[in-house]
Figure 1 (tube, rainbow, N blue to C red):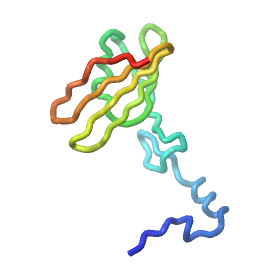
Figure 2: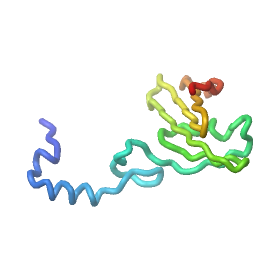
Figure 3: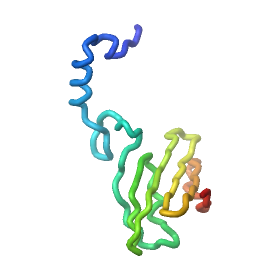
Length: 119
């Protein structure tokens, strides 16, 4: 059985646009289509201990997060999760002046690398 894209079946571009406008955008709480930015905005995380940031250890869903630091500033966290049993997770932390990255391999053992400054 051959798979055919909906746009190949529907010739009228207006109908395709109407269908697209009615589909919800995926979020952390809703199923839907991927946003045009390509990333799911996951929301904010309060960071109590700026020196250790242990709150980020369990953040493993791919997406963009806002980090709200108790010192009154904010940062952005981008998470990539390969979703395979042999893959891993990358977290990229963007501050006003620097970019940091760390990795976690998924081998039944949750162990994060140290944050590494890349910029």
